[in-house]
Image (cartoon, rainbow, N blue to C red):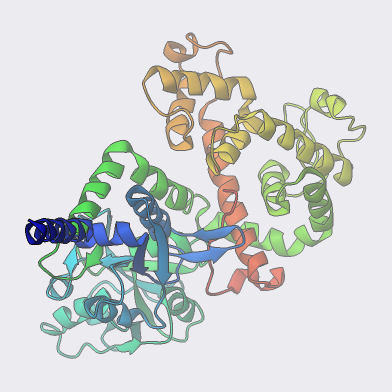
Length: 468
């Protein structure tokens, strides 16, 4: 009897041990509590800002890790070309590095569902003759990142254009290659359209000659093995964030305002940063400390309002650096709207008051975007737009949804349904997008410790919008 009982106990223990062991890679990751990813440092992927990590890839993969209930561990190889080999060797669970899906890469790794469509673009500097075809660049100096999809594209083109030559750079990243084109140290480079969109506001003299590829998908990469549990979970997650609108919100946060200024607007702004801002920067910094704001955000608001002109005046009677109305100035105890210090202090206090009225339930950066919209159009009109959004089952706590509704406030069909009535609803949308662009440029120069007089010809920007 005893041997039989011992045998049953042993079998039970073995069964318990077997069932407690993870059966799939996904279960192992969840048991270990950690998802390890490979990525790279760039504005479109991952970087450390003053308020923590940022970047499109970081935000998406962090949400994925959160959905699995695990922490995220990030590895950034020294060279871009090391990412896929390290993944194949099993040094991480996946790669989320702005990787383009190509036939060559698909032989080495398994890709998830795509989450963004880009094209590869040939970039040159304004002032040089624009190339119209591959034949036009054969005699030029072309540099691309080693191990990138751009190399694969050039290899394909070389089959037809045998004289095509290029240099593969291991030590520089995409932004640095763009700066080399700007500084006329090389003739051309290739950039993904999303990266160029983010960088053109800093490099207003860069131009796209032509698309050098058709539309391509960015996706996450996984090892080829029999266990595809993590890969399947990633596909489910990407579908979920597409269907819920979360993916669109993340992409909007990084890309929607990037091309607002255009070449002329950017150049003019950078000249004003160099010539006008230094006189007023101490006042913006003082106001920011007093009201716990970012001085660069206050400066961006002021530039949108007055182009940093203390005596600015609009046809409607608003005046000064922050373009305060007479009634608002009285409310804020501003006795002289044309005095830069009074105007900046008053504007900072007014923005802080509006920001505090926005529900703390709304996370940043949406809360600040809505505060900016309210600063421009009025808090009541902002709330009208949010109520209209709620009536259509849209998320009224998301700027990406509210900014679609605001323009309706100028249409009788819609504003007659609201409490505060008609408003020029397109203006606050443009207002917010412009300020985001001005703010990004200031953050970039400030975080890099650059002299503002160097800003018009700067290189290697890192977009960093801790508030916006």
